[in-house]
Image (tube, rainbow, N blue to C red; front, side, top):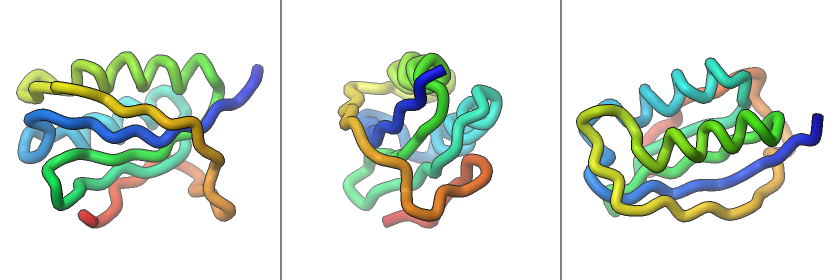
Length: 95
């Protein structure tokens, strides 16, 4: 199965509502690798890679987010996995 890597930035009410934790949990359940972090502008940024179908599932989830989130937009850019990929999916400190 082909792999895909994407960088996404999620905007709206996405901080303080468990978005990072939920995205991390969703990505782990889909078998993806990568990371997620809050940005100082109020958005959430993530880099995710793995099977293309699993990445598509995460993107669909990110458009809604957890119940308390109010997503106003998701920017998606094709990316490359990091040179030293993690074995799983992790939350990183805010940037």
